[in-house]
Length: 268
Image 1 (cartoon, helix red, strand yellow):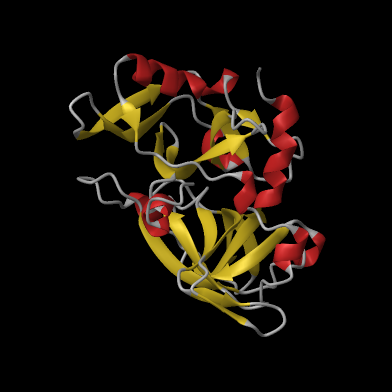
Image 2 (image 1 turned 45 degrees about the horizontal axis):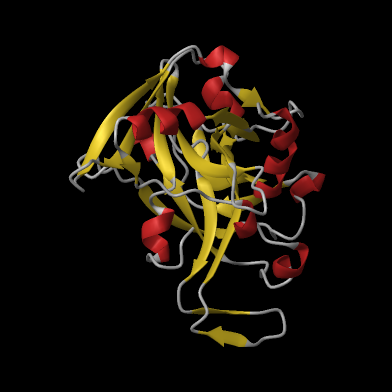
């Protein structure tokens, strides 16, 4: 991310709507395996369950043409089965789609990109995590029920709070909970702390005028209450429609540090 552009503008430029033949989800651009020279492998991150039953996906990219005009271009990706990389732990609901070919193809046609990449330096270090309170405001960026600003190719942003302490692994797993309305289409949404004007650290000091951005995790599932009153964790649906089960307003978020496991499996 750049320090020259408003942070909020950059955050809403990180995501991409994933319209597959199996449903709708959210993806976001991420710099994988970034070197000290700034080279990196571009990927689209989403949930495992978004791609598992899909063969093809359509994405809409905001580009800048040779005349410096913003345009929205449709891009089709076929034969996902041979391209998607799944997290090596089958219990971790994450997948990445390496996408250097997309950028190379469109750049060869004279386009430049307005998309912004999330990156490893936005993931809280162990020291930075100490300043993350047990209760924090968070933002969830994506396409709930497939909704978006289609004319401007923008996602929607929802706000919530951490329902479990980010510093702890919820029930011993690399996850935490958020209290927010989570709907189908939000699978794969990045979950962000964004304090524009400052933040309170662990020692009670208010860092006035120092914006804070942390990429905490990726939305994966929701807590559902069935007709018998039982509560369970279920994948956020990719199909948009009615359900006989009642969400209880809790989303299950996979911690962003789980993305590191993909690096050894990426193509050169």
